[in-house]
Length: 172
Image (cartoon, rainbow, N blue to C red):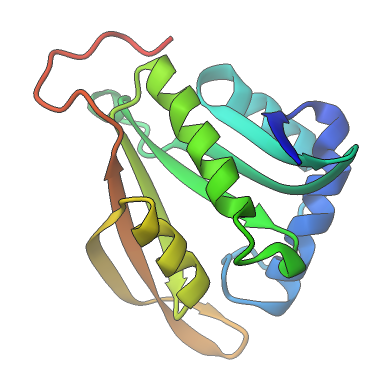
């Protein structure tokens, strides 16, 4: 398995990985699975200033991770929101860690200082992965999203990518 930059050719595979999370869980609050074309657009947007990576298992995409805008206000530009999704049978296998570690390396190189992740509770696998990678809880929104017939909390966690206290350079 290798982690590599995503291309538009990976959009269908990413959409297929994501669809079960949309349709059968509250892990994401999207209610309809995005199309292959929408995934191609999301990949292109992430690649402009952040990053989108895929886990390539012999030519087959088995997971993906990306960074994106955390808040559109200018002073937030050194922080980004991150997410990782892997095929359901790849959970707790190190796939998410491999994707995230490479993602954080790429985001640091671009000048990002903080990674922010939100997760619907309960989600032991995601909470465990984020804590193992050094994320710290910063707050929980209670009953913030309604999906699959009930209200859900979302916990937010933060990882300092480095450079705290220094004058930041512009994002490249």
